[in-house]
Image (cartoon, rainbow, N blue to C red):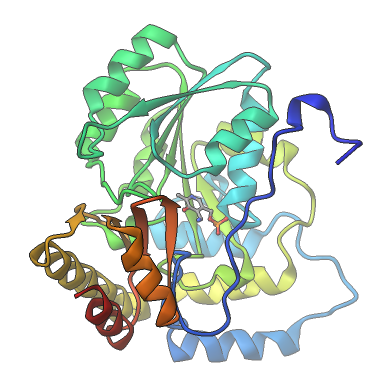
Length: 338
Ligand code: PMP
C-alpha cells in the first residue's frame, strides 16, 4: 500500500470470510431466501431491464415504496449501496478533522473505520461487566465531550442489546449533535421506532435490506430523516450507485413485507430456543433482540464446531457471535455445544 496516505497506513480491509459449504452462522444473514413470491417477482423483473440505460438516479419508485411502507413522504427517504454507503456518506457530510464521535462499545466495527477516514476521534462508551449499555453513561459522556455525532445501534451488533424507544429519545433529547440510529436488526425486535427520526431535527435512522428482508446480495440500505438531512446525504452520494436491478428488487421486497412475517417470527423463536438451551448448558449468553446471540465460550468449543463445518464469528479468544440459522442447523450447533 505504498501510495496510501500515512494516516491510513494501519487500516485493513473489512473482512468476513465467504464460506460456501457447511453451516454458515457467521455473518448475520437470513438462513433462508426471501418468500417465494418475492424471489419469483425479482427474477421476472430482470427481463424488464434496459441494460444499456443508467438507473433512475433519484430512485423515485423505490423511495416511494419505502415511504409507503412507513406511511411517510418519499422526500424523507434516500437509498444507498447497503446502509454502509449511507453511513459513510453521513460521516463525510457531517464531520471535520478533529471532531468527536460517541458510540457504545463493542458495536459495529465500521463506525470506527468511517470515523478514522474523516480524521475524527471515536470515543467508545463501554457497557458494564455484562456488556449492558447504560443510557446515563451516554448522556454523561455527551455532556463531557460535546460530540458532533452520536451513534446508536439498536439492537446492537454484536451484543444484541435493544434500547427501547424511551431510552433512545432520552439520548436524542440530551444533545444538539446529530444522532444516527442504526436499526439494521430492529425488525427482529419488540418494536420498530425507525419513524421517530422524523420528529427531530437531529436524527437519521438507517435500515437495510440485508437482514430481515434476506437480500444482502442486492446491496441496498436506506435512511429516513427530515428533508434537510436527506438532501444533505443526497448531495454527496455517488450518482447512480444503486443499480436498476437493485431498485426493482427493493420495491418488490418492501412492498411484500407482510409475507416475511413467518420467517422473521421463526428466527425470533429459534433465537429464544438457542438462548435458553445455551443458558441451561451453562454458557454465558446475552439477551438479544436481533438475529444473533453473543456468547462467551471456550475456544475448544469453536474448534469442535469447525470440525463439524459449523462457522460462527469469533471476535477474540472466548468471545463469539452466533447467527440464528434454520432449525435443523441450530439443532446441529446445539448438539456440538452440548
Ligand atoms: N449496521 C450494522 C449494525 C450492521 O451489522 C451492518 C452489516 N453487518 C450494517 C450496518 C451494514 O449493512 P448493509 O451495508 O448490508 O446494509
